[in-house]
Length: 54
Image (cartoon, rainbow, N blue to C red; front, side, top):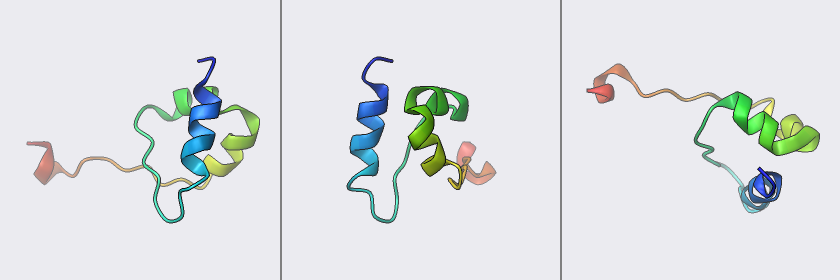
């Protein structure tokens, strides 16, 4: 977790329209710290549609 906030920040920096963060929301919030939690607050949670879950 030492570098998690830095790695997420690097992903946020160039992302203009879509950034995919794979993993649990709680883990992402914990790893991101307070500033990035603000950015993630409006994120859309995506789940695999039943037709693709196979």
